[in-house]
Length: 246
Length: 269
Image (cartoon, rainbow over all chains, first blue to last red):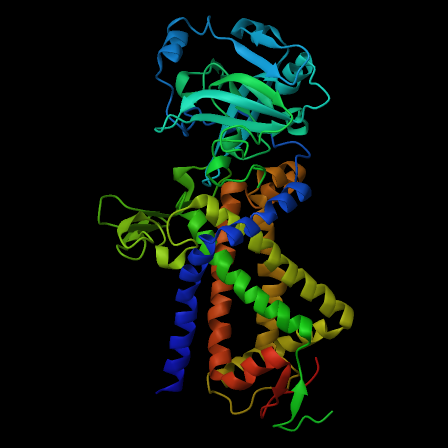
């Protein structure tokens, strides 16, 4: 057999072996878990430091891309939309000394911040929007987290086709980042239903799945291990990293 | 030192050999998991945010059974190869890169990221560890292209083209090897690492000038993909050279460290 042909065959079979070997290892629970070790390294090295870039008006995507689970269509949400969210309350509870229930007007009466930041989806695309609302840190501080509080969990109104609700979580440090806001407005208008009305979390230092839409309840907890599948978020429960800064 | 052809010299230190093979595995994983990640948004834009008007490259499936690839506005039918491909589960589907080249074979962005973000550390550690250790030991100068090598580049190429009987005299690495390794070690490897970091919103918040320098996040994605293609190009030439310039000697030396000198091989810088 021609030696070069033999070598070429050897190299090509080595190349085409990558995917099957990788797939077999990927389906091995132990190895899959081992690969996840990089997450804590990424979290420790990158973490949440500094400020996300802020853009100017001319960079805005006026037709901001809609993505994620479908807009809620249940009776409660329909009722909210019909009465312009007058009956909506943002509940803040859990490991706090002072529980709260904010109307939209109460949130609007708090100090507002506006930021034009980039939304980076885990899929790879990016869009720039102008977000206005309340600093999450202000809402959390008003509730006075207890000493055992570590995470802030966002319960949302959207559900997937299995009926599983969307939720997300941040640690207290990320929750107090100055650009982490509960946005009420996008691109100079009140949030519309498809963009997460009436309240959407915005976390510009992390990937888009952290920026939960249709937030109805903020629960301060010591651990998220007993919520849903225990990984701290809807997408996290499906294998995505809890630390979404990379 | 004896430089007679046929003499065996200890050419590659343990760290060089170990990092070389770790890098081979890491590179294979990074390319296949990277294509898996690319499949989730199979287009590249020369802009900060996603913008169809700045689209340079896109893979799509306009209708069932048809795959297309668009490059600089020109569309090519690539059914079976790109766009409409192997779904990794025995069927065909609308998918940019085929399952036989991705990790895992089936479409799974979360797991592709898991592999990619793990092996990125291995590849970066091999590159930086080897670079620092070679700089400390002093043998980095054997491989770095220097101004005195420039006049020898064409004669070396002429030798490869069989326009010249003898290669120009050189040390451990010939001038073209030095040019290739220097480009990979000091230009392409840093490019692939930095453009990868520039995609992270967390890194962008720490070092805003980095993402800005590459033209923004989507542009950084384009550079990251381009750097991958350059590395693949190097890999193709490198394996061809290894395969044709005494494959047994080459492979053995990268496993045991001992290399048998050929007719034109030198030793030293």
